[in-house]
Image (cartoon, rainbow, N blue to C red; front, side):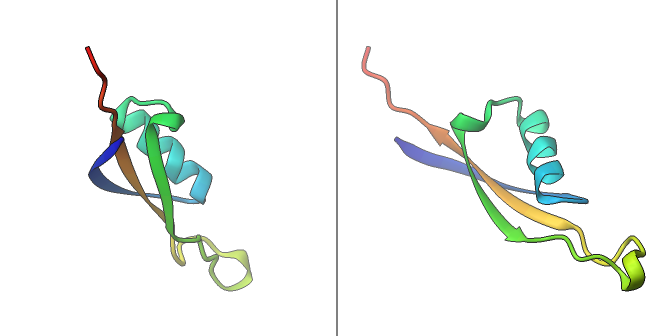
Length: 66
């Protein structure tokens, strides 16, 4: 199995960033490698907007024998 395509996505949480990525590339989770680049950080006293979560998604390309 070889890996191809590195894409980065952001979300309010890591899980939201992963969901956005999978929806954008239209692939199931088992066909991609997911790497968390940064966790979300909340603002002072829970105020929004400090720093979103970021993930890198690598699409796996399988070599099939025909």
